[in-house]
Amino acid sequence: MAELNLDKIHSSFLLAIDECDTVEKLIQIQKEFLGKNSVISEERKKLRSLSEIDKKKYGKKIKEITVNILQDIDSHKIQLVKAKYKNRENKEFTDITIDWFESSGTKEHIISSVMEEVVQIFSSIGYTVAHGPEAETSWHNFDALNTPIWHPARYESDTLYLDKQLDNLLRTQTSTVQVRHMQENKPPIYIVSPGRVYRSDQLDSTHSPVFHQIEGLAVDDAISFTDLKGTLEFFVKEFFGKNIKTKFIPHFFPFTEPSAEVLVSWKDNNWLEILGCGMVDPNVFEKVGFKKGTQGFAFGVGVERLAMLRHNIDHIKNFYDNDLRFLRQF
Image 1 (cartoon, rainbow, N blue to C red):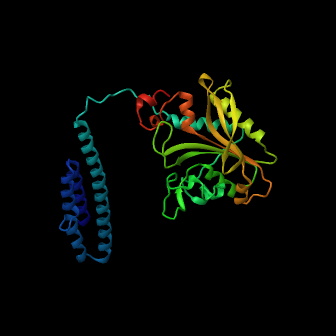
Image 2 (image 1 turned 45 degrees about the vertical axis):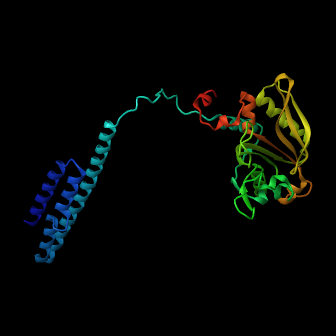
Image 3 (image 1 turned 135 degrees about the vertical axis):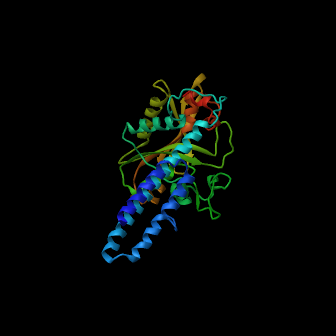
């Protein structure tokens, strides 16, 4: 008789939940069947008067019914909530002033596509990609790269420091990745390191406090400036076209010696600077523990600079305005 009573309770519950159409009613049903003074609670009280055998058997049945009721309540609650929000979506007002247009799918940002293209060019001649943190130490950003303490690049007016001791900063160049890679790997090394860099620059047509660089490093036996020149001439012709001429003029960088700037012939026979390069200074190799006599070259190029030259873009802020009229052109 006891089991029969539980079966009736379960049947009554199933009928009630089948007719339930709101979460509020469902809560009341849960109280009615599983609450403090519920029908299941009353059945539990009857266990006291039963024999040990019947108590065990009937108690197991109560537990099964309770679990089933809880599962059914949870399942029905999910269905009610989904239906509630579905109805709300159907009733929501649609703004007909929105300029709806057929989606053509996602499209890569021009900076990302230029950066990927540059990486692919160097990958085609055996370079691999290396990455590193954007929040760096002064040692990796300056000391390891042979930058003297008095160098203007260390000034707070040029660099975004993260502490008053000037020990940590937002990297000003991806050369920091080269340092970390050399600390963990021995020659031969052929890497490019793309990524964001930060400087305390005022925004104008060609400068931004946040921009993108790709820097390269090659360290191998008997490597020379001739190898550097040939590598960069190959890159320029692959990126800008076979008819582009290049010119190397002497320059100074703390971490390379000799150093040079690379210029390309442009419209109206003008020469435009696109990147810096040079043979890695022996002091840099010493900082990372390489043996005396190690040779290598390094170079660095601004991604925005490349994109502006190729596509005749007159202001760097166009890359970051998120103006679809501009971005859809590329």
